[in-house]
Image (tube, rainbow, N blue to C red; front, side, top):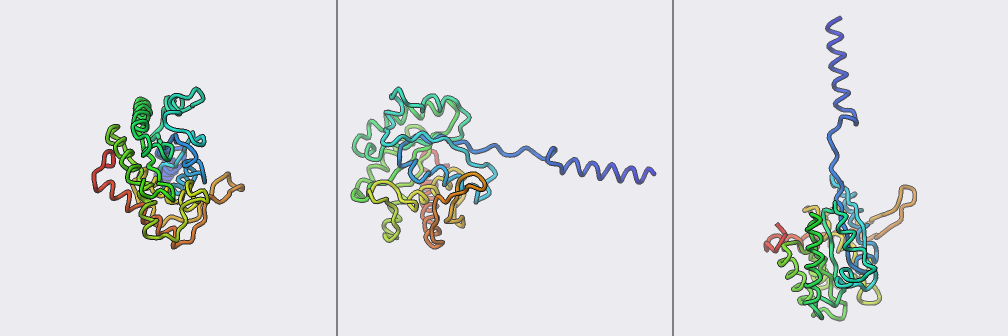
Length: 261
């Protein structure tokens, strides 16, 4: 009788330990606030990153809030009475606050970008979040502006001891190596779905610290039963964009750029 009782107690203990009620705590979600404009919202960049994170089975699922009215500058996000950015940052519990300047400001008015970028970064740090700088791409007919855009974002990262997402550099490399891949929309400014996918792969590499290589080129979003496609790329194209994105992320890390340890 004692032997059977001991066996029963052992089985009961095992069941308790393996029960969901007694499982170890789950990792909290990766919470990211996006502050920018249509370069962030077109094709729903945050949702693409979320879908990549799900496909990559990251322990911390990706959650986001987006503040991206069309054409807004960082200055407007700071000063406009309609801006939700300062209040939303202050709510806290963000892992990262992503900031994206209006596309031409970094080379046309770099001082303004730096001035108001620093103010937003200070707010992010006060809320115990890590600032991330979304380095955008030069417009299709302004390829020569990419160096100046990169310089301004890199300067912001240095001044605020934070990280750069080298999306613009990944676009530049892709245009040189695979000019057949259409990264731009018809307006030669906003991204195609492939362009946003490339950006999402850079974000994934920086935020999670792992390569996006091997992840699917078809990404979905929506509630179960109501899923819709965000992007659907041929495998060869998705693999190429993943490779370029990771090369750019690795290059920033290897160069020991500010905040990329």
